[in-house]
Length: 348
Image (tube, rainbow, N blue to C red; front, side):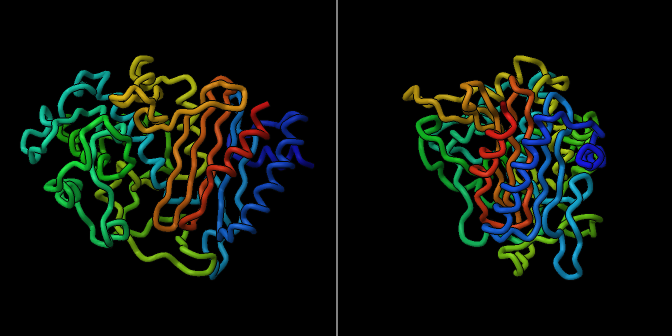
């Protein structure tokens, strides 16, 4: 009986008849995606009107011995969805008058090496500051570094362009942002995020991807269906791509972004309003969220993630009260189009 099947997951809500049809279609789509993309394991969770209407694991967290995916327990690298969590923690610091988005970063880090151009916290968080991306083996660096040590990887390099003249997506900007955040708060970044976001939302399965301890229920990470990824240490870039979570925990986080309780309405608008270049062209990115339109021309926010052994997406359609999360344990899989297909199924 399908209704009984659905009540086994997450928040224990029964599905309505239209949702049953949608879930059948979505499940077929998911199985096809898993097969064609040769994904070892995947977790999908969907909420509608604050109810968890579908949550299912596909494939395996570990192939030998076989360990099945459990959406409420299996921990994936969420990769750059971490930026969305960081953005909410940043907004809380703005609400507490500890950070002004339009202040120079040198207000908060006066010892950061001077560049040809000044740049603001807003430009840094919106990928407009001109901070470079990874070089060489930096993406797969297997050396545990602090955030300050991570900043040292790029702090002496020149900006790529005059701030706000280009949009250049990168994770190093969020490493620098996390250094600012822990400096102004007087606490380490992970503790800050725990206190301001993770603990209040009871995201009990969301945590730092610590490389030096064994974490129960963490999936293996693959670069091909049967080939494990290289070992990597993500501690220094936790703000931009270093958290672990489950798909069901991220649904809770996404639901918070439909009617925010942790941050003010004004700060939330800062996160979810597309920034503009000096040319007045919009970037399609606010702070920690891409901003686009649904097929009904209503707003949606989302963030994709691509890490070592991870391809992910969290998508939120606030007017429709729809949240979709897809987490996989394989690198270099394009999940955005798949998530948009799920969006089309559930948004009506």
